[in-house]
Length: 121
Image (cartoon, rainbow, N blue to C red; front, top):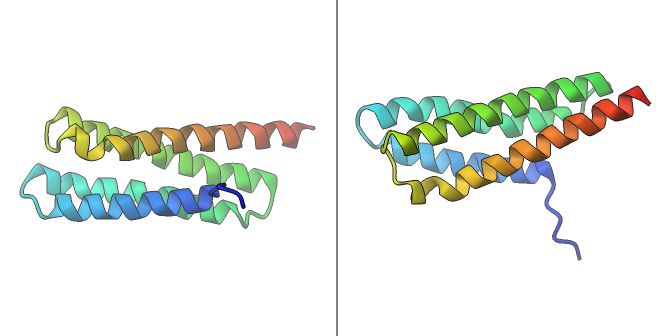
C-alpha cells in the first residue's frame, strides 16, 4: 500500500484548511475579515485549477491550467505572509499551512516544467 497522495487530493485538503482559516478570520473584526475573502478566493482556486488540468484537452491546456494554479498558490502565499507580518494572526497558527503552500508551489512548478519539456520532445 502506497502513501502517495495525488496533487488533486493535496490541493483539496489545502482548500479545506484555507476554508477553516477563513472561517476563523471572518469571525474577527476589521482587516482580518477583509483579508479572509482574498485568501479564500486564491486558496481554494488552486485545487479547482489543478482539477481542471486533469481533464485538459491538450498539453498546452494542461500547462495553462497548472500555470493558473501556480499563480493562485503564489497569491495565497502572499496573503498568508501578510497575515503573519501584520501580526493579525499568530505565525504558529498558520505556519503549517504556509509550509504546505510552499510545497504546493514547488510541486506545481515542477509539473509545469516537466510537461513543457515533454511537449518539446
